[in-house]
Image 1 (cartoon, rainbow, N blue to C red):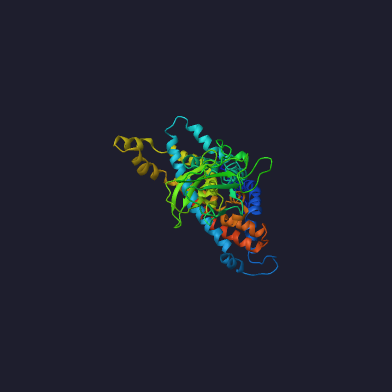
Image 2: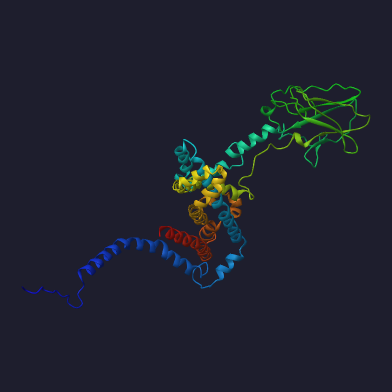
Length: 447
Protein backbone atom coordinates (compact mmCIF):
# COMPACT_ATOMS: atom_id res chain seq x y z
CA UNK A 1 0.00 0.00 0.00
CA UNK A 2 1.50 3.27 -1.12
CA UNK A 3 1.77 6.23 1.21
CA UNK A 4 -0.56 9.25 0.57
CA UNK A 5 0.93 12.02 -1.47
CA UNK A 6 1.32 15.24 0.49
CA UNK A 7 1.02 18.43 -1.52
CA UNK A 8 2.96 21.38 -0.32
CA UNK A 9 2.49 25.02 -1.22
CA UNK A 10 5.57 26.72 -2.48
CA UNK A 11 6.84 29.54 -0.30
CA UNK A 12 5.26 32.87 -1.26
CA UNK A 13 2.38 31.22 -3.14
CA UNK A 14 -1.17 32.07 -1.98
CA UNK A 15 -3.64 29.37 -1.06
CA UNK A 16 -6.80 29.03 -3.16
CA UNK A 17 -8.90 30.42 -0.29
CA UNK A 18 -6.74 33.51 -0.03
CA UNK A 19 -6.83 34.02 -3.77
CA UNK A 20 -10.61 33.83 -3.71
CA UNK A 21 -10.78 36.34 -0.86
CA UNK A 22 -8.49 38.73 -2.74
CA UNK A 23 -10.58 38.31 -5.85
CA UNK A 24 -13.79 39.12 -3.97
CA UNK A 25 -12.14 42.09 -2.30
CA UNK A 26 -10.93 43.40 -5.65
CA UNK A 27 -14.39 43.03 -7.18
CA UNK A 28 -15.92 44.81 -4.18
CA UNK A 29 -13.50 47.72 -4.54
CA UNK A 30 -14.26 47.95 -8.24
CA UNK A 31 -17.95 48.29 -7.45
CA UNK A 32 -17.35 50.78 -4.65
CA UNK A 33 -14.79 52.86 -6.53
CA UNK A 34 -17.28 54.88 -8.68
CA UNK A 35 -19.29 55.76 -5.57
CA UNK A 36 -16.10 56.77 -3.73
CA UNK A 37 -14.98 58.93 -6.65
CA UNK A 38 -18.39 60.57 -6.79
CA UNK A 39 -18.42 61.06 -3.02
CA UNK A 40 -14.96 62.57 -3.12
CA UNK A 41 -15.82 64.93 -5.96
CA UNK A 42 -19.17 66.09 -4.57
CA UNK A 43 -18.57 65.98 -0.80
CA UNK A 44 -14.98 65.57 0.35
CA UNK A 45 -13.32 67.97 -2.09
CA UNK A 46 -15.91 70.78 -1.58
CA UNK A 47 -15.55 70.46 2.19
CA UNK A 48 -11.76 70.66 2.07
CA UNK A 49 -11.86 73.50 -0.46
CA UNK A 50 -14.41 75.46 1.61
CA UNK A 51 -12.32 75.13 4.76
CA UNK A 52 -9.27 76.40 2.90
CA UNK A 53 -11.19 79.16 1.10
CA UNK A 54 -12.60 80.44 4.41
CA UNK A 55 -9.04 81.42 5.42
CA UNK A 56 -8.65 83.86 2.50
CA UNK A 57 -10.13 87.24 1.71
CA UNK A 58 -12.97 88.02 -0.72
CA UNK A 59 -10.71 87.87 -3.77
CA UNK A 60 -9.02 84.68 -2.62
CA UNK A 61 -5.52 86.14 -3.04
CA UNK A 62 -4.63 87.13 0.53
CA UNK A 63 -4.47 84.82 3.54
CA UNK A 64 -6.47 86.31 6.42
CA UNK A 65 -6.58 83.41 8.86
CA UNK A 66 -9.62 83.45 11.11
CA UNK A 67 -10.64 87.01 10.21
CA UNK A 68 -13.66 85.74 8.26
CA UNK A 69 -14.88 83.82 11.31
CA UNK A 70 -14.41 86.89 13.48
CA UNK A 71 -16.32 89.04 11.01
CA UNK A 72 -19.03 86.40 10.76
CA UNK A 73 -19.86 86.56 14.45
CA UNK A 74 -19.60 90.37 14.53
CA UNK A 75 -22.01 90.92 11.62
CA UNK A 76 -25.58 91.73 12.84
CA UNK A 77 -27.06 90.17 9.70
CA UNK A 78 -25.27 86.89 10.33
CA UNK A 79 -26.33 86.95 13.97
CA UNK A 80 -29.94 87.32 12.81
CA UNK A 81 -29.46 84.32 10.54
CA UNK A 82 -28.07 82.30 13.46
CA UNK A 83 -31.02 83.39 15.62
CA UNK A 84 -33.51 82.38 12.94
CA UNK A 85 -31.77 79.05 12.40
CA UNK A 86 -32.03 78.42 16.15
CA UNK A 87 -35.76 79.15 16.01
CA UNK A 88 -36.13 76.72 13.14
CA UNK A 89 -34.21 73.96 14.95
CA UNK A 90 -36.15 74.41 18.19
CA UNK A 91 -39.65 74.83 16.72
CA UNK A 92 -40.00 72.99 13.40
CA UNK A 93 -38.70 69.46 14.32
CA UNK A 94 -40.60 69.46 17.63
CA UNK A 95 -43.88 70.51 15.97
CA UNK A 96 -43.44 68.04 13.12
CA UNK A 97 -42.62 65.15 15.45
CA UNK A 98 -45.60 65.98 17.66
CA UNK A 99 -47.99 66.36 14.72
CA UNK A 100 -46.70 63.18 13.12
CA UNK A 101 -47.20 61.25 16.36
CA UNK A 102 -50.75 62.52 16.92
CA UNK A 103 -51.79 61.92 13.32
CA UNK A 104 -50.20 58.46 13.23
CA UNK A 105 -52.15 57.43 16.34
CA UNK A 106 -55.41 58.94 15.08
CA UNK A 107 -55.19 57.35 11.62
CA UNK A 108 -55.15 53.91 13.24
CA UNK A 109 -58.70 54.51 14.39
CA UNK A 110 -60.33 55.58 11.11
CA UNK A 111 -61.45 53.50 8.14
CA UNK A 112 -60.01 55.72 5.44
CA UNK A 113 -56.54 55.82 7.00
CA UNK A 114 -54.77 55.02 3.72
CA UNK A 115 -56.46 57.87 1.86
CA UNK A 116 -55.74 60.24 4.75
CA UNK A 117 -52.04 59.30 4.79
CA UNK A 118 -51.88 59.72 1.03
CA UNK A 119 -53.33 63.23 1.22
CA UNK A 120 -50.89 64.27 3.94
CA UNK A 121 -47.92 62.74 2.14
CA UNK A 122 -48.71 64.33 -1.24
CA UNK A 123 -46.91 67.64 -0.44
CA UNK A 124 -43.66 65.66 -0.28
CA UNK A 125 -44.00 65.24 -4.05
CA UNK A 126 -44.00 69.03 -4.49
CA UNK A 127 -40.62 70.69 -4.86
CA UNK A 128 -39.61 73.37 -2.37
CA UNK A 129 -39.60 75.86 -5.23
CA UNK A 130 -43.22 75.12 -6.13
CA UNK A 131 -44.27 75.05 -2.47
CA UNK A 132 -42.59 78.41 -1.92
CA UNK A 133 -44.50 79.95 -4.83
CA UNK A 134 -47.78 78.48 -3.56
CA UNK A 135 -47.33 79.90 -0.07
CA UNK A 136 -45.98 83.22 -1.33
CA UNK A 137 -49.34 83.66 -3.09
CA UNK A 138 -51.31 82.32 -0.12
CA UNK A 139 -49.62 84.81 2.23
CA UNK A 140 -50.29 87.85 0.00
CA UNK A 141 -51.46 90.89 1.97
CA UNK A 142 -54.18 91.78 -0.57
CA UNK A 143 -57.32 89.74 0.32
CA UNK A 144 -58.18 89.66 -3.39
CA UNK A 145 -55.06 87.55 -3.99
CA UNK A 146 -54.01 85.95 -0.70
CA UNK A 147 -56.31 83.11 0.31
CA UNK A 148 -55.36 83.28 4.01
CA UNK A 149 -56.12 86.98 4.29
CA UNK A 150 -59.32 86.50 2.30
CA UNK A 151 -60.47 84.06 4.99
CA UNK A 152 -59.28 86.31 7.85
CA UNK A 153 -60.97 89.39 6.39
CA UNK A 154 -64.17 87.43 5.77
CA UNK A 155 -64.32 86.32 9.41
CA UNK A 156 -63.45 89.82 10.66
CA UNK A 157 -66.09 91.54 8.55
CA UNK A 158 -68.70 89.02 9.73
CA UNK A 159 -68.40 90.31 13.29
CA UNK A 160 -67.34 93.91 12.62
CA UNK A 161 -68.91 96.24 10.04
CA UNK A 162 -66.37 97.88 7.75
CA UNK A 163 -66.20 101.66 7.55
CA UNK A 164 -68.68 103.01 4.96
CA UNK A 165 -66.49 105.62 3.24
CA UNK A 166 -62.75 104.81 3.57
CA UNK A 167 -61.77 107.03 0.60
CA UNK A 168 -63.97 110.03 1.39
CA UNK A 169 -62.40 113.41 2.17
CA UNK A 170 -63.45 117.05 2.46
CA UNK A 171 -62.55 119.77 0.01
CA UNK A 172 -59.95 122.19 1.33
CA UNK A 173 -61.24 125.64 2.20
CA UNK A 174 -64.94 124.81 2.21
CA UNK A 175 -65.72 124.81 5.95
CA UNK A 176 -64.73 121.25 6.85
CA UNK A 177 -61.22 120.48 8.07
CA UNK A 178 -59.46 117.22 8.88
CA UNK A 179 -58.57 116.68 12.53
CA UNK A 180 -55.43 115.09 13.93
CA UNK A 181 -57.32 111.89 14.75
CA UNK A 182 -58.60 111.39 11.20
CA UNK A 183 -62.06 112.85 11.75
CA UNK A 184 -63.52 115.87 9.89
CA UNK A 185 -64.73 118.93 11.85
CA UNK A 186 -66.61 122.03 10.78
CA UNK A 187 -64.68 125.27 11.11
CA UNK A 188 -67.84 127.30 11.99
CA UNK A 189 -70.06 126.64 15.01
CA UNK A 190 -73.81 126.04 14.77
CA UNK A 191 -76.68 125.55 17.17
CA UNK A 192 -80.29 124.38 17.40
CA UNK A 193 -82.36 125.88 14.59
CA UNK A 194 -79.41 126.02 12.18
CA UNK A 195 -78.77 123.86 9.11
CA UNK A 196 -75.35 122.75 7.92
CA UNK A 197 -74.25 121.38 4.57
CA UNK A 198 -71.24 119.04 4.65
CA UNK A 199 -69.84 118.15 1.25
CA UNK A 200 -67.34 115.33 0.74
CA UNK A 201 -65.49 114.04 -2.29
CA UNK A 202 -63.34 111.00 -3.07
CA UNK A 203 -66.19 108.47 -3.27
CA UNK A 204 -66.66 106.84 -6.66
CA UNK A 205 -70.32 106.74 -7.74
CA UNK A 206 -70.18 102.95 -8.07
CA UNK A 207 -68.96 102.71 -4.45
CA UNK A 208 -72.01 104.47 -3.02
CA UNK A 209 -74.30 102.33 -0.84
CA UNK A 210 -77.22 100.73 -2.65
CA UNK A 211 -79.74 102.69 -0.55
CA UNK A 212 -78.17 106.08 -1.38
CA UNK A 213 -80.72 108.62 -2.66
CA UNK A 214 -80.34 112.10 -4.16
CA UNK A 215 -79.29 114.57 -1.48
CA UNK A 216 -82.04 116.72 0.02
CA UNK A 217 -81.79 120.09 1.71
CA UNK A 218 -82.34 120.11 5.45
CA UNK A 219 -85.40 121.97 6.79
CA UNK A 220 -84.58 124.08 9.89
CA UNK A 221 -86.35 123.26 13.18
CA UNK A 222 -85.98 125.41 16.29
CA UNK A 223 -84.94 122.71 18.77
CA UNK A 224 -82.79 120.63 16.40
CA UNK A 225 -79.49 121.05 14.62
CA UNK A 226 -80.04 119.72 11.14
CA UNK A 227 -77.95 119.28 8.03
CA UNK A 228 -77.01 117.09 5.10
CA UNK A 229 -73.86 115.15 4.23
CA UNK A 230 -73.58 114.76 0.48
CA UNK A 231 -71.17 113.78 -2.26
CA UNK A 232 -70.05 117.14 -3.61
CA UNK A 233 -69.82 115.86 -7.15
CA UNK A 234 -72.22 115.80 -10.10
CA UNK A 235 -71.93 113.09 -12.70
CA UNK A 236 -70.97 114.56 -16.04
CA UNK A 237 -69.51 117.68 -14.44
CA UNK A 238 -71.11 120.96 -13.43
CA UNK A 239 -72.24 122.23 -10.06
CA UNK A 240 -70.44 124.45 -7.60
CA UNK A 241 -67.97 123.19 -5.03
CA UNK A 242 -69.06 123.61 -1.43
CA UNK A 243 -72.83 123.78 -2.05
CA UNK A 244 -75.63 121.28 -2.57
CA UNK A 245 -76.41 121.00 -6.29
CA UNK A 246 -79.11 119.08 -8.08
CA UNK A 247 -78.07 115.56 -8.99
CA UNK A 248 -75.68 115.10 -6.09
CA UNK A 249 -76.08 112.01 -3.93
CA UNK A 250 -76.57 111.84 -0.19
CA UNK A 251 -74.16 109.76 1.92
CA UNK A 252 -76.28 107.47 4.09
CA UNK A 253 -74.99 105.75 7.22
CA UNK A 254 -72.53 108.55 8.04
CA UNK A 255 -72.09 109.12 11.79
CA UNK A 256 -72.42 112.79 12.83
CA UNK A 257 -71.61 114.21 16.27
CA UNK A 258 -72.30 117.58 17.93
CA UNK A 259 -69.32 118.57 20.09
CA UNK A 260 -69.63 121.28 22.73
CA UNK A 261 -66.95 123.79 23.73
CA UNK A 262 -65.41 121.39 26.23
CA UNK A 263 -64.83 118.69 23.60
CA UNK A 264 -67.63 116.41 24.83
CA UNK A 265 -70.10 114.79 22.46
CA UNK A 266 -73.50 116.37 23.16
CA UNK A 267 -75.47 114.42 20.56
CA UNK A 268 -74.88 111.78 17.91
CA UNK A 269 -76.89 110.50 14.97
CA UNK A 270 -76.58 108.81 11.57
CA UNK A 271 -77.49 110.22 8.18
CA UNK A 272 -80.56 108.98 6.31
CA UNK A 273 -80.64 107.61 2.76
CA UNK A 274 -80.68 111.15 1.33
CA UNK A 275 -77.80 112.27 3.59
CA UNK A 276 -79.92 114.35 5.97
CA UNK A 277 -79.50 114.22 9.75
CA UNK A 278 -81.08 115.80 12.83
CA UNK A 279 -79.39 116.24 16.21
CA UNK A 280 -81.99 116.70 18.93
CA UNK A 281 -81.89 117.22 22.68
CA UNK A 282 -79.23 119.93 22.48
CA UNK A 283 -79.02 122.75 24.98
CA UNK A 284 -79.02 126.27 23.48
CA UNK A 285 -75.51 127.25 22.47
CA UNK A 286 -72.87 126.70 19.82
CA UNK A 287 -71.59 123.29 18.71
CA UNK A 288 -69.03 122.00 16.30
CA UNK A 289 -70.11 119.20 13.99
CA UNK A 290 -67.75 116.27 13.66
CA UNK A 291 -67.69 113.31 11.28
CA UNK A 292 -65.85 110.70 13.41
CA UNK A 293 -62.84 108.78 12.19
CA UNK A 294 -64.84 105.54 12.10
CA UNK A 295 -66.55 106.82 8.93
CA UNK A 296 -63.22 106.93 7.07
CA UNK A 297 -61.19 104.11 8.56
CA UNK A 298 -59.42 101.93 6.04
CA UNK A 299 -61.03 98.51 5.62
CA UNK A 300 -59.43 95.67 7.54
CA UNK A 301 -56.65 94.32 5.34
CA UNK A 302 -55.90 91.11 7.18
CA UNK A 303 -52.67 89.90 8.78
CA UNK A 304 -49.24 90.90 7.51
CA UNK A 305 -48.02 87.31 7.21
CA UNK A 306 -44.84 88.33 5.42
CA UNK A 307 -44.06 91.33 7.61
CA UNK A 308 -40.92 91.45 9.78
CA UNK A 309 -42.69 89.96 12.79
CA UNK A 310 -44.44 86.94 11.25
CA UNK A 311 -42.30 86.07 8.25
CA UNK A 312 -40.30 83.31 10.00
CA UNK A 313 -43.37 81.61 11.59
CA UNK A 314 -45.13 81.87 8.21
CA UNK A 315 -42.28 80.08 6.42
CA UNK A 316 -42.14 77.45 9.16
CA UNK A 317 -45.87 76.89 8.54
CA UNK A 318 -45.12 76.17 4.86
CA UNK A 319 -42.40 73.74 5.94
CA UNK A 320 -44.83 71.94 8.24
CA UNK A 321 -47.27 71.52 5.35
CA UNK A 322 -44.59 69.73 3.33
CA UNK A 323 -43.03 67.50 5.98
CA UNK A 324 -45.93 66.51 8.26
CA UNK A 325 -46.75 63.52 6.03
CA UNK A 326 -43.14 62.33 6.21
CA UNK A 327 -43.13 62.36 10.01
CA UNK A 328 -46.56 60.70 10.18
CA UNK A 329 -45.58 57.83 7.85
CA UNK A 330 -42.32 57.07 9.67
CA UNK A 331 -43.93 57.17 13.09
CA UNK A 332 -46.89 55.16 11.77
CA UNK A 333 -44.45 52.46 10.63
CA UNK A 334 -42.99 52.34 14.13
CA UNK A 335 -46.46 52.28 15.63
CA UNK A 336 -47.37 49.22 13.55
CA UNK A 337 -44.52 47.25 15.17
CA UNK A 338 -45.66 47.84 18.75
CA UNK A 339 -46.68 44.69 20.67
CA UNK A 340 -50.48 44.74 20.64
CA UNK A 341 -50.71 42.42 23.63
CA UNK A 342 -49.13 45.12 25.78
CA UNK A 343 -51.75 47.67 24.71
CA UNK A 344 -54.59 45.20 25.20
CA UNK A 345 -53.29 44.24 28.64
CA UNK A 346 -53.30 47.91 29.63
CA UNK A 347 -56.90 48.28 28.44
CA UNK A 348 -57.94 45.19 30.39
CA UNK A 349 -56.29 46.68 33.49
CA UNK A 350 -58.54 49.74 33.11
CA UNK A 351 -56.19 52.25 31.49
CA UNK A 352 -57.89 54.84 29.29
CA UNK A 353 -56.59 55.82 25.84
CA UNK A 354 -54.75 58.88 27.11
CA UNK A 355 -52.91 56.85 29.75
CA UNK A 356 -52.01 54.20 27.15
CA UNK A 357 -50.73 56.88 24.79
CA UNK A 358 -48.68 58.68 27.43
CA UNK A 359 -47.30 55.76 29.44
CA UNK A 360 -46.99 52.98 26.83
CA UNK A 361 -47.15 54.22 23.23
CA UNK A 362 -44.80 57.18 23.57
CA UNK A 363 -42.09 55.34 25.61
CA UNK A 364 -42.11 52.40 23.18
CA UNK A 365 -41.89 54.78 20.21
CA UNK A 366 -39.05 56.80 21.75
CA UNK A 367 -36.34 55.35 19.41
CA UNK A 368 -38.45 56.10 16.32
CA UNK A 369 -39.35 59.59 17.57
CA UNK A 370 -35.68 60.33 18.20
CA UNK A 371 -34.67 59.27 14.69
CA UNK A 372 -37.45 61.36 13.14
CA UNK A 373 -36.56 64.38 15.28
CA UNK A 374 -32.83 64.25 14.54
CA UNK A 375 -33.47 63.69 10.81
CA UNK A 376 -35.69 66.77 10.76
CA UNK A 377 -33.08 68.79 12.66
CA UNK A 378 -30.52 67.98 9.96
CA UNK A 379 -33.00 68.90 7.24
CA UNK A 380 -34.04 72.13 8.94
CA UNK A 381 -30.45 73.34 9.26
CA UNK A 382 -30.11 73.16 5.47
CA UNK A 383 -33.41 74.87 4.59
CA UNK A 384 -32.89 77.40 1.82
CA UNK A 385 -35.54 77.34 -0.92
CA UNK A 386 -38.58 78.25 1.16
CA UNK A 387 -36.87 81.14 2.92
CA UNK A 388 -35.43 82.58 -0.28
CA UNK A 389 -38.70 82.33 -2.25
CA UNK A 390 -41.36 83.21 0.33
CA UNK A 391 -39.68 86.12 2.12
CA UNK A 392 -40.13 89.40 0.17
CA UNK A 393 -37.03 91.49 -0.53
CA UNK A 394 -37.66 94.16 2.14
CA UNK A 395 -37.88 91.55 4.92
CA UNK A 396 -35.41 89.02 3.50
CA UNK A 397 -32.86 89.94 6.17
CA UNK A 398 -35.41 89.27 8.93
CA UNK A 399 -36.10 85.76 7.58
CA UNK A 400 -32.57 84.69 6.64
CA UNK A 401 -31.15 81.44 7.97
CA UNK A 402 -27.55 80.28 7.69
CA UNK A 403 -28.02 78.66 4.27
CA UNK A 404 -29.60 81.73 2.69
CA UNK A 405 -27.08 84.04 4.35
CA UNK A 406 -24.25 81.89 2.99
CA UNK A 407 -25.65 82.13 -0.55
CA UNK A 408 -26.34 85.86 -0.34
CA UNK A 409 -22.85 86.63 0.99
CA UNK A 410 -21.17 84.46 -1.64
CA UNK A 411 -23.28 84.96 -4.77
CA UNK A 412 -26.32 87.14 -4.04
CA UNK A 413 -24.59 90.48 -4.18
CA UNK A 414 -22.00 90.16 -1.41
CA UNK A 415 -19.36 88.53 -3.67
CA UNK A 416 -17.33 87.56 -0.60
CA UNK A 417 -16.71 83.86 -0.97
CA UNK A 418 -14.23 83.90 1.88
CA UNK A 419 -16.95 84.92 4.35
CA UNK A 420 -19.44 82.66 2.58
CA UNK A 421 -17.10 79.69 2.97
CA UNK A 422 -16.77 80.47 6.68
CA UNK A 423 -20.57 80.34 6.94
CA UNK A 424 -20.55 77.02 5.07
CA UNK A 425 -18.00 75.61 7.53
CA UNK A 426 -20.14 76.80 10.45
CA UNK A 427 -23.21 75.13 8.93
CA UNK A 428 -21.23 71.90 8.44
CA UNK A 429 -20.00 72.01 12.03
CA UNK A 430 -23.60 72.28 13.25
CA UNK A 431 -24.92 69.48 11.02
CA UNK A 432 -22.18 66.89 11.60
CA UNK A 433 -22.98 66.15 15.30
CA UNK A 434 -26.61 65.43 14.45
CA UNK A 435 -25.54 63.17 11.58
CA UNK A 436 -23.08 61.28 13.79
CA UNK A 437 -25.76 60.83 16.43
CA UNK A 438 -28.17 59.43 13.85
CA UNK A 439 -25.60 57.02 12.40
CA UNK A 440 -24.59 55.71 15.83
CA UNK A 441 -28.20 55.19 16.84
CA UNK A 442 -28.88 53.35 13.60
CA UNK A 443 -25.89 51.05 14.20
CA UNK A 444 -27.04 50.31 17.74
CA UNK A 445 -30.50 49.41 16.49
CA UNK A 446 -28.97 46.99 13.95
CA UNK A 447 -26.77 45.23 16.53
